[in-house]
Image (tube, rainbow, N blue to C red; front, side, top):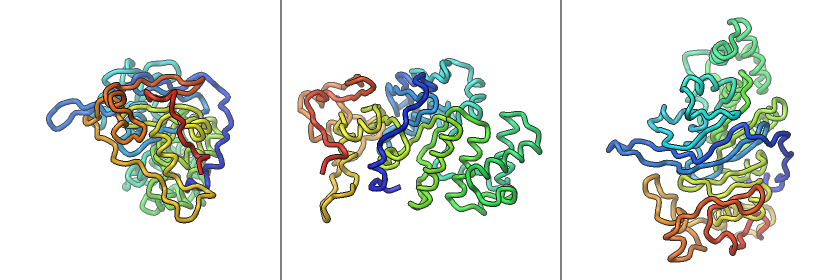
Length: 351
């Protein structure tokens, strides 16, 4: 969805619950390199997702948002990584210290994840109905007939026409947008309390993106599922989410309500991201602001603030030598910046 269509939709309905469904604290994830050394990909990441709440993890590619979401699912070990320290609590239970079987059991009824490029997540050798039914039989204990009926019900819920017929078709018969609907149906079939969506509209055209986002919004309203939405698209965040967690170079650098962060950002990186979005009312021919340089790779983070070498507000001798902590700035807001009290940064209201 284009940012220009969404920046006017910032007011969100508050969650009915303030108790965290997911509570991540001081999460550090590492991956082994070819030299058999462990390299830190995310460090000291903390955020909450309340029951029924929609939270966005935002940042450029390489910021650590996908790694953080995989850690919540307990899937970093499947990609050669490990949780070096920190905790991931689900409904008050720390899963990092729990038996791995407990984490695995939660995938389905407790939490589910929609990945990028859904066609790669579907097995081409089985019908979409069989793949949805397999998950339902495993997690809900339904027999084959009841599980297939559930598959039809879910395809109908995600608005796939002729669900009773299409349940017998194979993934290659579906478009990219329809495959994404199938993935959503598969994840939602077991009634999870948390849905993680990792760039679910990547590679889809704008019209299909809008349809998928509206579908996620409708499902959340119907089921009350909490949503952790991983994206680089701030326009989508404005449309879909209530809170936003901004990440850069493996760290959380800002956290707050969407409207507060968008209108009054407290970190230069967040302000830079917002300034790069085209908005209604901009004069014709005006150049968009861009952030110079590139995000450093894991293991190559600079000393001091990770963002200082790309920041127009960095002070030599301060930002390049002292690593900032993520501190609460106002009630419900936090930022990782040494100059947070003396900067006035531009948000989406800037002309």
